[in-house]
View 1 (tube, helix red, strand yellow):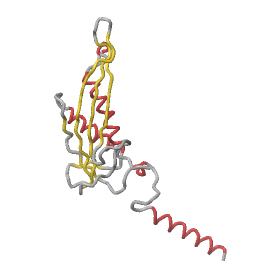
View 2 (tube, helix red, strand yellow; view 1 turned 120 degrees about the vertical axis):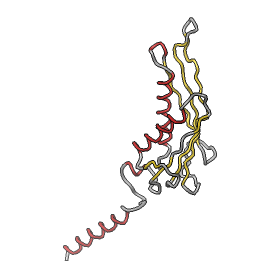
View 3 (cartoon, helix red, strand yellow; view 1 turned 180 degrees about the vertical axis):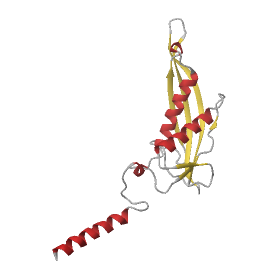
View 4 (spheres, rainbow, N blue to C red; view 1 turned 135 degrees about the vertical axis):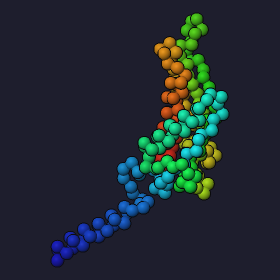
Length: 179
């Protein structure tokens, strides 16, 4: 009699657990719990760029796609038939002197970037309110800066790539589901 109760209790526990595993269960574990289970594929069209510097939009798109593939369970596809679409535009790009030598030579320079992104499903519904501050719910602006030192042999290209990689990490981080 006691053996049957224990077996029935274990069977009920296993059945309860199995009911929560498939689909979008309220309790999930692991890395996949950070991301929406309603999205499996993401289409990332080429980010537009308002900058006069060549290939910044392309480099940013490549970095975002790499980050999505590396950090998320989503698969990036080449079709607008995907579950979701992540679009972006590089709004501003500037370079400024942070530290000057007594001879007015630049010792440290900083690059500044502002990127606007939108993440929607295939019906145009915003998937994630991707910002911690109140902005229109369909877009978010991401800012990135990077310092570089010409005297040490660093160039604007290396600083741009570091800033682009940092912005890509921020954009993919904003794709995480809210807690």
